[in-house]
Image 1 (cartoon, rainbow, N blue to C red):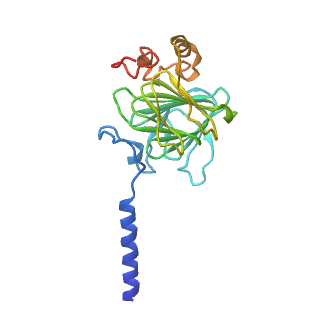
Image 2 (cartoon, one colour):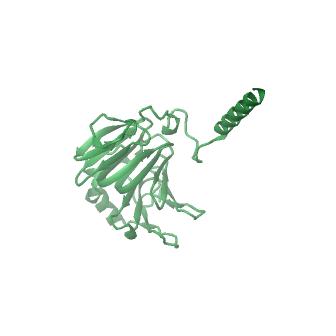
Length: 251
């Protein structure tokens, strides 16, 4: 009896010790005034579908005992592990309680993960943090991960993955991390890279010309200006030029 009790107590102590030592993947410290998804319980809503610009838009809620895809509704709560999907002309905007937001469109699939991590499985997305906030956020794909903090980034996974996943900074600094490469690739406003599968070479950073920038900002980007509601960082983007990290810094 004493042996069984000792074994149970020892096992419980080890379990508590392991749980207490577990820590999330390294991310920059977050201001206490800006709660993040990582601090929210799994069963607590951390975001909402704020806009459905065009249908169809779907959500697969993981809170259901048997998760299945349903039509998205404006105001719908979203939780960690939920998946948002758009199809054809579908476009939607999701806003988090901590100031992070994203838009996806076309044939896009995105899963909300813990610790402000957004996993884009297909399609294109634009992600931002509301001006004035510094919430560390990651956009992950199967081949690279982009980290943003108070900036606006665009990621696109083409149908033919061999064309390369596009990472682009609309505003501010975006750090792209590739597997098995120790150094991050840092992009500033108007810069992009293409990450191709199994490519052993480091992607070359390309900066848009001022003419390209104006064309992209004015009409080409479907997620930037195709919504009736302007992007929260739109006024900042409109004042920047390629190579300029922020309004306070020249290129």
